Image (cartoon, rainbow, N blue to C red; front, side, top):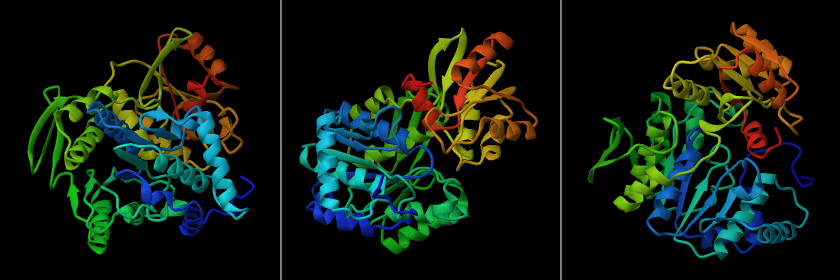
Length: 405
């Protein structure tokens, strides 16, 4: 962190310099599937990994952020990187960097590339960290496939104020001659992606034009130019996962995968903190979701709407760079009240009182609690039959799953 630039300026110059000093490991990866988008990237990657591994193939995967341990970000042939291997590649990266400015994400992405280039595998799944065009992962020159999940307003300070500008940045991962699976988008985003694809010379397979996916009679049906497949619904919870599953299936079919991989993608995927049902605490029905932007809140609200009707209380903690009112507004239809809590160990978080004020401004009953345990204890006394949803931040979700909250 001492090497981190004073301000984050999105550029690939530092990354290219560091990778050259490391012998350009990004040129020696297994075939890469590069995944960008605002929401759904992690879920799609989880389904792709489950599908490919279910068909007996070895898969590297790089994702961010982590929930409990940094090691979650780097999976080598199906297994989280070991402590020893992680320390070794980080030391190697820092030595090669020779004291120059480098961001945390750039350094750790370079470390992942070093580790992945040295471990045999059949595929490498890379999830974009921020944006696409200038993201540290976008140094791979010839991926096997690109994927763009739904684009929404997020990180406007880096990516642009309009949906079109943000979509254009996400579409920066597109490469000449490399097919891209594109999820259903708002019109402005789709037009921006199509313009970027035309400039790059990248052929697109767009949902609604070249392929279709939907839930029909309790099954997932996906149809593309090669035919129709009828699959189980995804094991991951929430109606939004049907859309993510369609993207994953379209991507697997573009990679030439058969029915065994498609079935495994639906039945074996694991992706914590996304509409995850937890063990009851204080006798309360408990759910966990790491969504933290307005689009994710809309998805969470839709998922809650499909559950049996029940009074719902949100326990919310949010980072300071998130817009609280915009996140809470879609959820205000499903929730009766909010308890705002701090995020353990996070200084750059909204004060619970500020979150509570924003909730009250939306007409919600709101209070604060010093921590999650106190919040749940208070809810158990006041509304013991409530459904409790912990949400607002992946960092809060990680603290819950790691036993720190």
